[in-house]
Each structure stands twice: as C-alpha cells, then as structure tokens.
Length: 386
Image (cartoon, rainbow, N blue to C red):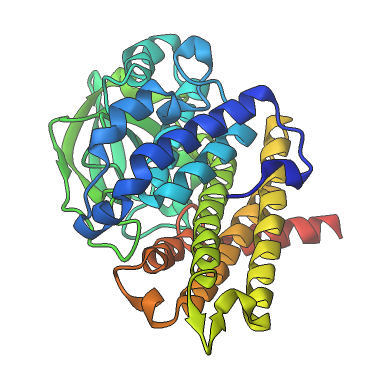
C-alpha cells in the first residue's frame, strides 16, 4: 500500500473519502476470498449490493443522479485500492463505471430515470460495456454488429466478445452499426437483461482475473424499443471515445493495485524467508529489486494521477491517459514478475498470492487498448508536437 502523502499530490477530502471507502471494503470483504474466487472462477455476486450501496458501481455519476459524484482522481484511488485486494472485482467496477458514465453524460432525462436511477439504487446489478467483437478489438470502427430500425424499434444482429459482467448485467451498453461503414455509422444502445433474441455465451476460461465473468453476447433478431438509442444516431463512436480516456486511467490504477499487492507480498516474504543463514531482505540483490519496484510503481502513480487530474480539468488528455495506461500496466507486469522470482519455487505454486497476481496482471496490457495501440496514440501526439 502506497503512502499517498508521499506522492506530492494534494488530495481533496472527497478524493480521500472515496479511496478510503473502497480500501476499507476491499480489505475487509474482498481480500479474504479473492484466492477462492479465482480458483473457482466465481463472480463476486454476493458483494454487488454492498458495492452499489457504497456508490462504487457508479462512482463518477453525479450525486443528484444517484452516484457517488467522484472525480477521476478519486476514481483512480478507489480502483487501485480495490485491485490491491481483488483485481477481478476491480475490473467489474471498471466496466460498470464505464457504462454508467456514458448514460450519465449522454442519456436523456427519461432514459436516466428508466435505467440509471434504478441502477444506482442497486436494482439492476452491474452494467456491461459491449464494444469488442470477435473480428475487432483494437479497431473498434470496424465493428459489424448491426442495428436496423424496424417500425417502432431496433433489431440487433451480431456478436460481442470479452464482455465483463455480461452474464450478470442488468443493462448492456451496446455499440452497433446503424448506417454506412466507418466511425460515423456506429450508434449506442441500451439492451436490457432478458431481451428477446439476446443469448449469453458461456463463461471464458481465462488465465487471470478469473472471477470477473467474461462472456460473449449474441444478438439474433434481438428487438429493442426505439428509446434504447443513446445520444444521436451515428454518434456511438464518439460516445465510446469520450469514455475511453477515463477507462485507460481506471486500468492504469488497477495495474497499480496489482503491483502494490505484489510488492507487499515480496517485502513480507523477504523479511521471513532465510537462505544461506540470513533473511532474503539482507541480501543486496533483494534490496536492489525492491528498490527498483518501488521506483517503477511511484513513477506509474505520478503518471496516472497526472492523467486523472488533466481529465478533471476538462482536458481530453489522450496522450497522457495512454502514457499512464501503457507505463502502469507494463510496470505492474515487471514488478509482479520480479516478485514471483523473489519467491522462487513458492511463487510458481497455485497456493501463493503472487502466482495469482502474475496471471491477473498479464491482461492489463491487452484490454482497454493494447500496449501497441497506446504507443500509436502517444506517437501521434509526439509527431504533432514536432
């Protein structure tokens, strides 16, 4: 656990409150069962009502709309605290907060009353963000799921993949093609759980973050009402893009939680395990490894908080959010790898926490924009500056 005061940021009372609320709940309720949930790939369903009650499923939704009213800095603190205890639950929060912020920013008052208010009251379960498809992940503009206007409603045809909370969500924020090719032909919809023509695929047997619940969504003549369209027709790509900067900050913070948890495990082990007659923590090499990990995580913290603060100031911060996500996810991977090495054979055992953290950390370089995509965004900004 990082000492926030050592980072040099002046956190507001509200930011500290949302972070401490998430940390207290995560350590008391999530951490004790994290290993078992991972082993059984069991979704944290029993904690959803408490997460909703605490406002953690809708952190960035304004208080007048039923959310916690947190800003991006507070959101990052809460995501890190949750991931330090259970990365699977943290990614459930990330998906739900992404979807509900879209509703808060782009839905009409009537749509908010129909979906957002019941959601923030904990009556709909989590929400899913359904953008990725089998044939397009990074290239979202190439999606092929179609929505056709038919009388007084829309008919959806197609498939979504890698959808967090897809089997448990009460509402799905779905992106589909309503018009021609490219970005301008994409629109955004809400699809309710149980909609006729919507089939939920089997749970993916994933390497890590196994308790987060990842499925495909299949739309076969799925009919939804006309009022399911969020924002203007053809505005879906811009709506998705508006949420991705904050989404990258969330995954950067999640990565930090994994890295902090791994470093804490490494410090504990180094202070208990003896080799050649002395504690591992007394070896110079061990100290160098721990020092390097602390430097990496502190740098990732500063980049993440900078990106979050820029977003809170109204800046798009495209490059800065990509920098934060790229560096934090890759730094977390390096830190967890070093802590597995420090544990030796013990770290390779399913019984060890660092083994789970190692698997959990790997996907942070893939979802919410791969490391390669982040580098493209950053390079574009560098060239524009030149």
